[in-house]
Length: 313
Length: 320
Image 1 (cartoon, chains in turn brown, cyan):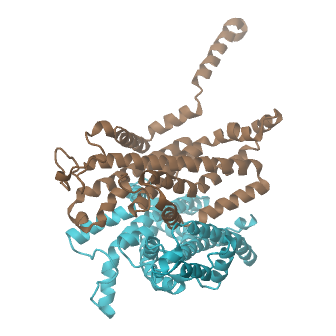
Image 2 (tube, chains in turn yellow, red; image 1 turned 135 degrees about the vertical axis):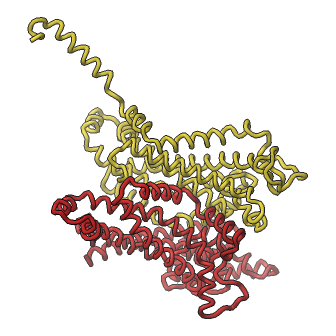
Image 3 (spheres, chains in turn orange, purple; image 1 turned 90 degrees about the vertical axis):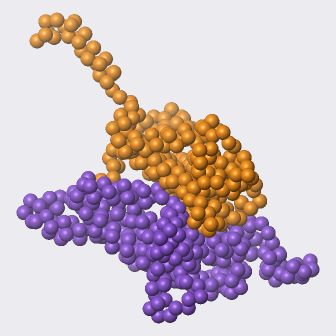
């Protein structure tokens, strides 16, 4: 009725309501953010992870000692006010070692995941986009890498390649081993996504515009799988940190004097330390658990927020 | 079905060959001269060259690989430098120790996981469910070696309830029942670590498959027919949820023969994983190669059994 009488006003209200609607449309990432904020457990993991990252990142500010400052008059001292976590067999402040060890462990985790994400995105993108024999060969390769027994092979590679490398360089070897062995899962995930995405109209449009295949994969297809990539990269980082800890504990990962949470626990090889100097091996172990747990919680929360359908019942 | 299995087996052959090439190449990259380690240090250069010739190390790499493959297929993996015995004779001596530990863990883990999985699914979001959710997340986030060390510290060092490591008390030479008790005592701590590690995944798996069934229409039908909750859960739901669980039970079997490398190292359990660590530290590459191939074969066999299991349960799988 109103519209008929005063068409001008009616169109105005229509316009303004349209504008309001535009304002109310949320971007997908905004929705993810809102959903994630509601997830208490996920937030808890995220905050804990943030605290851990801050602590290890600010290590040089937080402790007055250097990670390799030795003090021979002050070895194997139990925790005290000057050394909150005591000192090790060379008189190094153990809290400093644990904090700096966290830096290396986190760094290895992050870069191992970067390697595996890059490889997984390339392989998955190409396999999914081209299909056919390319897909067949690439998936065959990923199947083969998947059926390698991870730890035995990682140990073998590390012992073969790592011997000629100085301790500072070992970190990169460990990153490479973990990254190179853990990409297939992600590659298969991305491939599956792209297989269905490539049938959609926007890909056809991109092709019709004469955009190069490489660009279609990198600019149009992969960004659409970003959610999955982020979730699996997060969860993979947790397992990369565990793998690094295991390798370093066995003496086949990052080696001293470079500290990592894994190789700090190596001190238990000395039975006396295991029995009587609990401060020299329990703190790094707890750090591993906290870091891995917070990443897992964060990752689970992210998955629920990004893809609510996939929620584990 | 037979055709499907045969096809899968044929598919495995190129995979096994490529894996063996990879492992061969990795081990060949190892620094150090295998001759230098084996031969009397006083040997002259000529003697060393002769030894190298005898071992076939002067031939090009692909010939070496083919020779190694030929011998391996016949079951001859060369001599173990560490044990001074043929590799094929060393491995069986240790496999059963790993198997023993794994079987115990496997049985306990499934006996706990199945009822717990059902319970947490039936009482979703209850206190029990939450407890197991927390248990799972801690179980997944705890490195096995650290958990092992904590148990050793608490139960061997402080309480002195269980021995620290090994499989039998050295010098005791117990026989019969006394030996059995001795081995059990040594097994408790490593078994706890492995059980907790596998429980986390297993409970989740059982719970999910049970939940899937509970949400099916026929369960609603059963309920609306007025059947008691007990009958619905145990007779209608559980039987169907059991299918994926039995599949999982089946394809875990090959894994029983592989050793948990880190755990066996921590507890000095004389299993196959410990042999791998010792072989790597001693640069016993014949052994390292054989064990890597062995572990890879076990993984492939497990995957194969899983695929066959799924195909048996769900005939639609075969199409691909």
